[in-house]
Image (tube, rainbow, N blue to C red; front, side, top):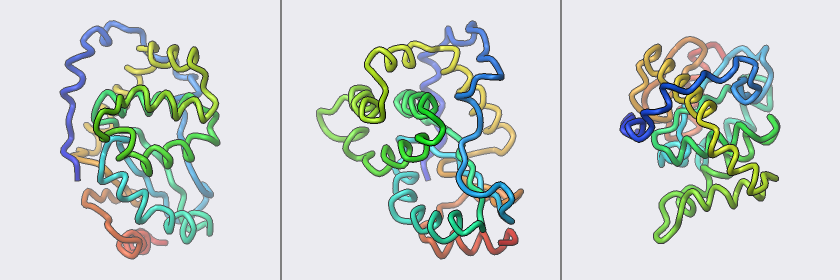
Length: 200
């Protein structure tokens, strides 16, 4: 599990002076999958540059979606918890897409993380812009998203609030109904077991 890092905030001291994003900003509304009336609600806090989050996406999540979310057993809520500025920019782009494109974009970024975030001689920001273009965001729109410090600060503020409330020490961090789970879930079976404990 990745250690919780906030050193990237030191590069953004002026953000404290920015006006807060308006509450009605649609980009800050919940991003979810499944039936809200499902017996178990699973919240996941993740970072797009967290290798453990990418591993979960590639090895566990697709079975979770097929067997638990799509069958109405689990309602899934995503929480952006960026561990660095690149992950923060990726979250801003994802949330600027139409709501129904958020999850596919996030899943695509996590699944290809080794190519855009950590590959040698690669500019991660340029890679995010290329993926954003494939998702329908123009270069001009991307520049506006990147320059939107009010939105950037709103996401950081929500992250701060979640960390303070739930004592999130790393990602991915889960909550099954009201029960936090702060260890890695390396298999679908382990995830399913937590769902069953929560009443699913």
